[in-house]
Length: 166
Ligand code: C2R
Image (cartoon, rainbow, N blue to C red):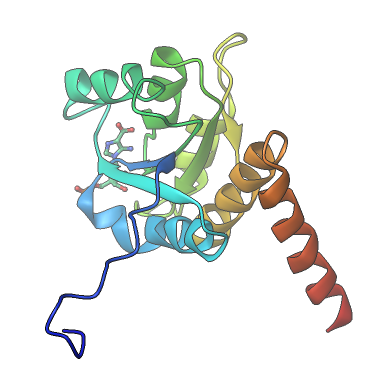
């Protein structure tokens, strides 16, 4: 409460420009690293759990509606026989960045191969496995958004310059 008894104005929620979707609730801790990086640069995201294997209709619906909801890039993380990023690219014309996750006994190699080797015309930009991949997916999404967002481009430049001085 403010001294005059009114509730402080809440800062407006950031408009979601990136969709971060994952195959299971068990992927959340890793995929939230992508959301954290986006947040550091003031970019809002929509986080969702959908599975091309377990909830295929819901996953397709989520991808088909992504652009209409204002999303500009989709980041999709899944482990094992990871079909999710491909399903996103099959159902949306937005750029899709795939993050293979190391959730199976094969340590992410399975998810990497499943995500990276898409048939021509269904592109998925595949990042590294696990946390590094999730974080870099967010950095790459930021660079894509910055192509048409001069203020974001300046924030990325400034962050790069700070890193260079360290
Ligand atoms: P559970 O922990 O729920 O059993 O999930 C998820 O991404 C998760 O890493 C185990 C793993 O299954 C993955 N999964 C996929 C897909 N849906 C779930 N690869 C998909 O649609 O590709």
